[in-house]
Length: 129
Image (tube, rainbow, N blue to C red; front, side):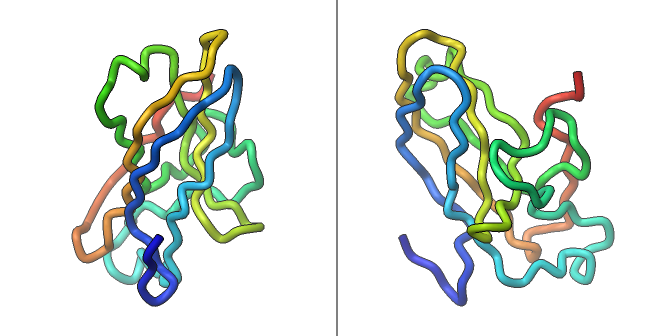
């Protein structure tokens, strides 16, 4: 996996998710986190918390995008929580949920749009229950 100056802004992964919850290290890392200096109210990388991550709907929403890739039929029983910054690794994690009784293999693109692409805005992936 390539990095430049300690940053990795996108990563496409092929994952096999067992039934239940699976925290996944996206590998995304960004050394310069001064988003507010680049664009007022720019979304952060995410809440800083250990796996399995924040409860659904926790603010602020992450700037990280989780994009299902083909074949999308494999995503039928897969959902995921809000991306978050794992303080132990300094990378972004996403916790996936597989509601099926068998493992599912999916392709997913994790993308951290560079602040030069901004300004940006984000809602949480799921509402608080």
